[in-house]
Image 1: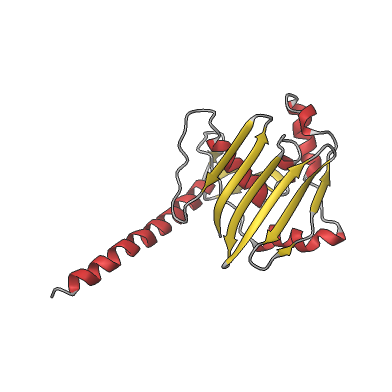
Image 2 (image 1 turned 90 degrees about the vertical axis):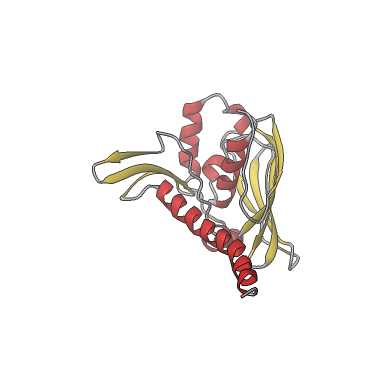
Length: 215
């Protein structure tokens, strides 16, 4: 899966951002507070998907255009006064998946500065499940397209305990404490190493063919 574009409108009540992605490696560069982490957070919220975040953080809309298995999709989430919605369209086949909706217990605008209330509501939203008419979309988002791997290089992300690592995992069931012999950072290192090897080989192979043609 390749994300092509993300458009964020009024995240946290003030952040507006449009980012066009390359097919290969992408670097987000900017000063503190420019929205680098917010872009990664939004990608994570949308593709986990994490209703515990989508229902407690204020925004007007989030749009993500992506390719998956050779087909182009538009994925959009919007907030209104009563609910958050998820809309998914297969642009290649001109097919709209059934809309997914979640009613607000309290609108995000009213809980922005209340961290304890935000935490309690997040736990409640973790228990959300699909209505009958939402199952097709729910299954595609939760089971078919790959989940993102977003790692924050923060000392609170994971801690060593003996031979195991204890870390926080934000998934559609909420933030969970997990124990493993490997941290999420190890997974990122392995994935990035594999991609680097592919990238290097794509550059070196034509050079080798060109070089051998002279002998």
